[in-house]
Amino acid sequence: MLTITVEDRAFRSYLAELQGRLADLTPVMQSIGQELEGRISARFETETDPAGAPWAQWAPSTQKGYPDDGNHRILDRYGDMLGSLNWDADASSVRVGFGQPYATFHEFGTKHMPRRGLLFDDPDAGTIVPGDERMVIELLEEWLAP
Image (cartoon, rainbow, N blue to C red; front, side):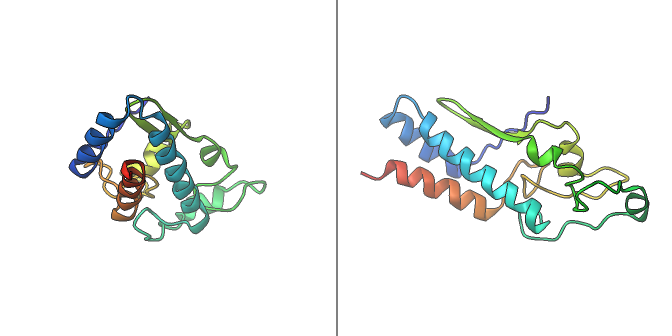
């Protein structure tokens, strides 16, 4: 199992204030998980990374070996990876990811395969794109509003 933690100072102050008001942040974390799941799912439709850049097209060898009964979409051969997209929230965190272990290769890329990002702006740094960050901050602000 791969665990990637996003540590962002912008979120920390909001979370600290929320934790001061609420003992259990599960509803907040559920809102964040639902929204991120929707955004990541939409990236399969647009075939773009979190920043909006198009995913690299298939290599000729991939095209040649593609099964006739597949979906003929990048990262969506049979829908297994997208179907494994999930989130889990608890009182202090939300975890968003895929149940298919090969999703890691797409997120980070390999020496033989270009990166086709789904979750992160920079997976090595664990940062999300500004649009996703704004969404999280806006959700946190909604929960902090009187």
